[in-house]
Image 1 (cartoon, rainbow, N blue to C red):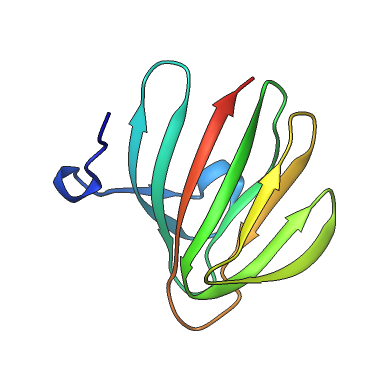
Image 2: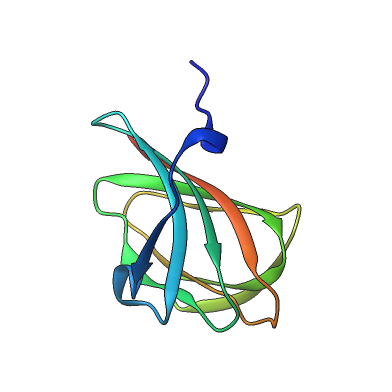
Length: 109
């Protein structure tokens, strides 16, 4: 299956998961798993949340920011990815002055 983000509308969500500012996103959801292309503007974040029933992988396409994994902050840059297993919590913060562009996959196990 090819998922064509080029043909999807961009949706803007305020305070995603309780985060700051806005996320611009395109989402594919098949009823079980979610694949998302997202952009956080400077100073924006995805709020801290726990993956109770699924896991998530975030791959940074461009920009840099901070990933907070179970309360521990770590820098993350383009070309890196982070994995949040089921039962853990995380947040993504754009701590730079440029957009932070990423893909993520939320997979039920």
